[in-house]
Length: 312
Image (cartoon, rainbow, N blue to C red; front, side, top):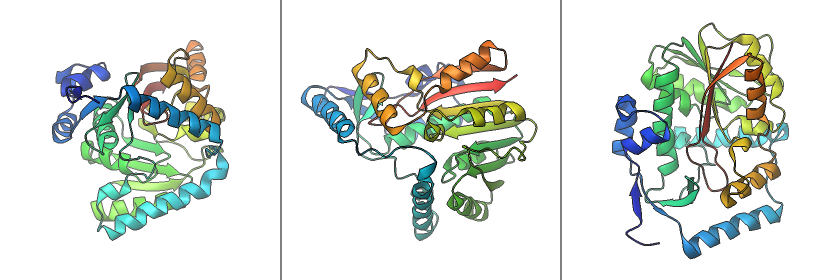
């Protein structure tokens, strides 16, 4: 890669990614952009070919873990590991970054592979995106429910923007509740946890009025089995829903990186049909889709496309 091939994500470029005006980016987002190193190079030539070959070999290996309800123990153990490291570090929030956020790998961005200067590029990008999305869409919500809350980091970010908002982390793993209980105690934030299975939503559990719903990298585990959860949301009528997920339907089959991402999603049984289903609901005037925005992705797929919608 050539040294003159250096780019940098500025506030202006982030605004363009979000289809927003730079002046409308929240202060916390601007501060996060200024603080982080968003310099990168576009991967070309031999390095690009080697990356493509790595993906193809991974797909051919047939060793990819398949998403689904059988993976509960994996998530339970993963969040336990994060919690143990969080405690050992004397409650350093960086220890709550999920282990699947890999350092040093190429990033998918605008139909290219890029190589960031900084290993924390993925996490820093998500930090900026959270501040933008939460500030824009949750400002009128009284309660925020994150389904698939994991280590609770997304709700901690929400507490920075809305200190008084009621925050509830829902996850099928008991270790998530353990983490959230520690966060409530150590950070003194208005957060609580509930065990919740997205494959079999608890119909007796009702969402508060004027609530917001969030998922980040959660729905991919549902594969094609997302209708029970969507129907649960339609019954509970939250004010706004944000899903930051890998959306199968946004890929372009004529683009090599996209095509390989589609094959990766298929082999892992990731979310498929979700966007098409929501568009059908919109045609029936059951929901309104407010925004669909492709941002960036990790090595194998674009897991950070966001979809904003609300039940009618």
